[in-house]
Each structure stands twice: as structure tokens, then as C-alpha cells.
Length: 173
Image (tube, rainbow, N blue to C red; front, side, top):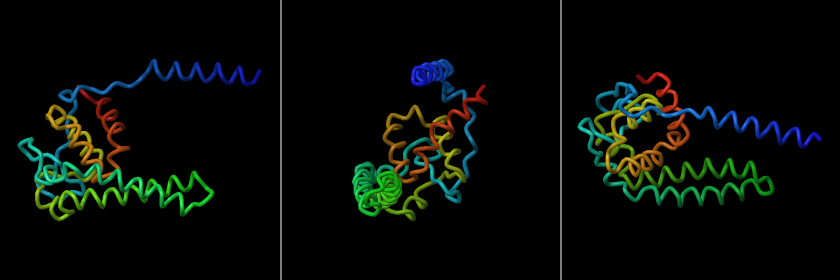
């Protein structure tokens, strides 16, 4: 009986969650955060002021493959470190993988100095970078590839991207 009640409750909650699925506003409806002109921020934009991709993006077209290799190596290292504790090994592996993947991606795009030297827009928060990219650059023909590369350079963008867009959509015109 308890199992049946739990199943009904789970289905009801799932139904409620899917009925009120938040929607992203159109890019043009979102107010883009003001970028920092220059490279003084923590997060460099993969697009220039005129909307073209930066030199580091052009250089790093293959960087995401390097990150995938780094993620695999990190997962293997995490599994060995944690031994018989798979959950902890997965967490460690993910962190090591992100770090190794970022290092490979950075190397493939020319390093942090090259990124800074070839960026004319930056942001203090990863959320501002996410919203700006969506609002200003999502119609760019290479947007998906540029977003993926930027997420390899800034792994925290992977988890911050969608929530930042949802939050910006709440205040959209």
C-alpha cells in the first residue's frame, strides 16, 4: 500500500512539474548585462564587441575533444583514488576531469594570457557571461560550438548557463 501511495504521489508531482515548465524568453526579450569593455573581468567573452568570434575561439575549435579526454582521465583517476566508494570517486573524478579538461582546452586555445590578450569584452560573473551570450550572440552561426568551447574553458558555465537564462527570462520584457 505504501508503495502505491508513493507511486501516485511521484506521478502527481511529476505532472505538476511538467505542467509548469519554465520557458526561456526569446534572446531579444532579455536585457543583456553590461559587459566590461576590455579584459579586466574574470570571464572573457568568446565574442568581440562587433559580434565576431575571438582569436582564441578560432584557435580552439578542437579544444572540446581535449576536454573529453581530460574528463575520462579524471574519472579513471577518481575511481582509483576512491577505491570502493563509487559516489566519492565519481565526484573526485568529475572535479579532476573538469580540471584536466580545462587545462587541455586552455592549452589548445593558447593559454589564459592569449585569451585575455584577444578578448575585448569580459564579465565579473559567469551568469552575466551566460545571459549576454544568449541575448547578444545566440543567432551566430557557430553559437553551439562557441558555447561548448567556452564551457570547456569555464566549466562552471555548464551548470550556470540554463539557470542564468531562466532567471533573466523572469524579468524579460
